Length: 384
Image 1 (cartoon, rainbow, N blue to C red):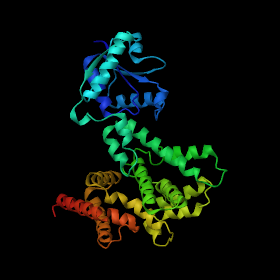
Image 2: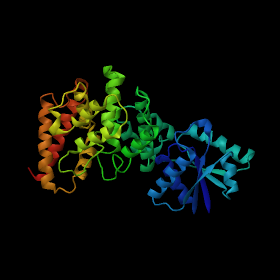
Image 3: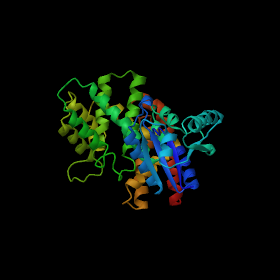
Image 4: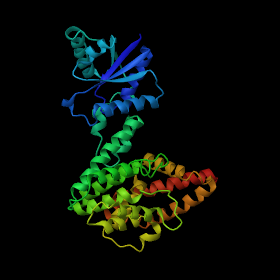
């Protein structure tokens, strides 16, 4: 078979979709992915954005025989025929899918005189993966780690950037000052999520995942403690900027101090300008003890919340931190990391790892398990 087509809204493309495309590649020399531009469905991404995401996803797979076409104002089966394609491929996950797709297949052929459909059945681990399934996972703390398992990386990055953009825009809706230049907000969002900050490839841990996690933690904390909108806004602004500079070299200033100064120089018009800067500074070990702020405990707890996550998430975090220090040899890293873990363990055992009560109750027990586990694994590697 020369050509076969796969179609859908693909908002976003998932690993399930990629599996179907891979099956299509086994059936034909060329695969054409048709994106339906259907405004009734109100997709999160425009057709052009979805086209770009799909093209980058298939390129990441190394597939050079897959092209993407946007279908406007026509039925996909009829558009396929115009492109010289006689067959569509569709994934069937269950009997309900079959009944629906069979009806569409009959309509395509009998009513529209369009392409016929070949059905393929995905493996068990992809049987429930769909765009709607992935969208439904968004929201709770850790949602991004879950959806990451079901999406190709270009789609995942686009998805969390879309979520972050919404969070950023809502953050400034609460601002009482009205003279903030909207282009300045766009610039700082692009900067913070781009290659100079959290979006940098050189950041295995202090990256977009860390940003999404912290902002989600703040929202959950606020919902469970009744925190004011003003406090939430101050915390989120501080978290957005707290690792804006990471790994930057300065003889006199820590990364945290440079990040605080970047926030102040950004001129985003906040009436809590200095408070936000101080909360950024509390994440600096050398400055933290000297700073007093009502939200200090919450800020530090959010930044350390990764320690209390599920074992697989914690292990991924520990591995990412090791990569961030890849210039340090194994022996030196284990010694330095061991001192940090000893410090964290002491705080956890005394009930002071998370200074905020809500975080302490939620994460202390699991954090202690994770810390002891990492220390034990390190001891095995050193033969102790």
